Image 1 (tube, rainbow, N blue to C red):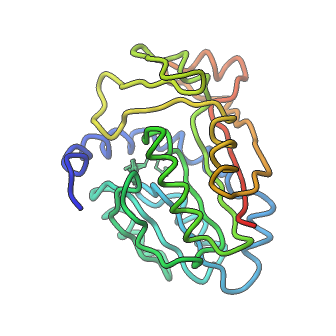
Image 2 (image 1 turned 135 degrees about the vertical axis):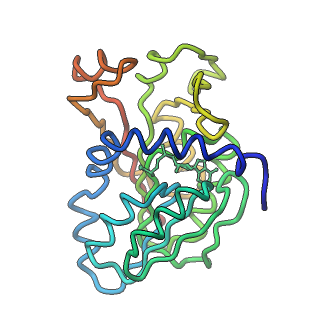
Image 3 (image 1 turned 90 degrees about the vertical axis):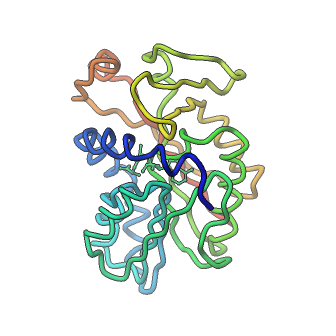
Amino acid sequence: MKNKKFEATFEFAKNWLNYKNLAGPTQEVMITPIVKQKLKIAGISLCDLGCGDGELTHKLSELNPKEVIGIDINRTLIKLAIKRQIPNSTFHLCNAAYEKLPIMDSAIDLFFSSNMFMHLNNDEVQFSLKECYRVLKNGGQISFLVTHLNWAKSNYILKQVNDDTFYTKRLVWSLSAVEHYRSTQFYSNLLTDTGFQFFQETDVIIPNDNRLNIRYLSQAGLPLFSLLCAFKP
Ligand SMILES: C[S@@+](CC[C@H](N)C(=O)[O-])C[C@H]1O[C@@H](n2cnc3c(N)ncnc32)[C@H](O)[C@@H]1O
């Protein structure tokens, strides 16, 4: 289904591609020893939600899964992901905020999402996590990266929604770049409410991030992202 987010995303794609120096090192932390171990098993299916231009999807595909599915709301980025010609991959345009994922029930072993949930409001995250749960197999794992609450301190336009959630809209970014900063407690509670068993939370420190608004956080060695992992029992 089309909505105005589809039309507003070109600018986001342009901006996001300028941030690739950050995406790479951040995504590496998602490929944990457990993930590598699981990918040694033959026949693994994985999904990368909010895959953007497919950089993480590509890295994961190098670990030889049986099937790789990338999903994003942004047509421009999906086209770039397809251009990578990742073996056994399919890419889909889908608004995960309120559309069913184009995947059958219990089809996925490993589910990844790097820096997408912060673009969704609280109800949308809830909807999307239910979809992740639906498509995961029993024993399947979800891993996702989200911006740390520290980022909230570095933005200009900020509104506190409740104790756990801050909302900001960057001055120059498009509609799809609305960001929500949440405590990891928010996500772990939601994961548990959805039926997941939450098992890991990791602070992600990127020592050399020179972007003006977060340089001081990076130089102080403060975490910029959180990695959350859970599994479907
Ligand atoms: C910050 S970028 C991260 C891209 C990629 N995962 C990475 O780490 O390089 C956020 C991505 O989420 C996508 N996105 C935002 N809202 C979305 C939604 N409602 N449904 C699907 N994808 C969405 C954006 O188009 C964008 O590609």
